[in-house]
Length: 282
Image 1 (cartoon, rainbow, N blue to C red):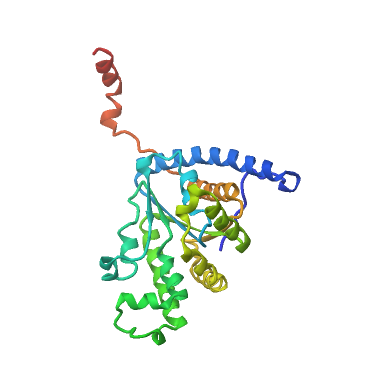
Image 2 (image 1 turned 180 degrees about the vertical axis):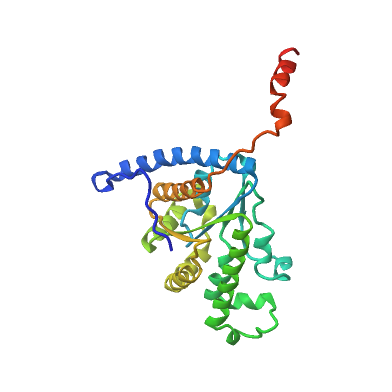
């Protein structure tokens, strides 16, 4: 897993909580503009795509982060996929199929809101879900050992290695919130009428499995963070700071690729003055 050094840092110990938030919002605004320009150039060059993977416990802030981080990017340059419970059609394919067909084309940023890692996370916490896949060698829960999930993690690593070799820049973010902060965010959903729709009793059932989820997350982070597809653990109790950290990592990573706008073919370059004259004389 990656430890990220934020560019242009300040001494947070001497700032109030409000100043920290304001500082993060200010830096995020700047990062958004840089990200917009990078995506535009990347699109023009047409050699790379970007895949952003977001994982986190319930209420970790994935939806609002997507909205804020990619706010200034051309709407046609960002495609967001939120993966829910697999459909009947998806269950008739291997578990990576629906993720593979959702990959971004070159020039665009794809965001997976919950990702292919649900297949070694939620299914590990709730192994009964695997039975819905109707796999040849899985007839009962007794067939689902740690080795089963480790093989899936190896397959995911190969999946990511393959798409990285073909021009997809992969960045994976685990939005790490504390159990206390999750409690406060769930209470907010209950207290504010306009937020009630976000609450589900299932959230409380999953919360009771907090320790198991944390253990499974730690395992997959350790086994699936690679040079071509690194995991970044983002402290997310403070949403503005988390958004800036993610945006900063994306921007600093994409800068390394030095995207170039392609030049006009020479035959067009030689005629630029003529084209100008044609338009001016209309």
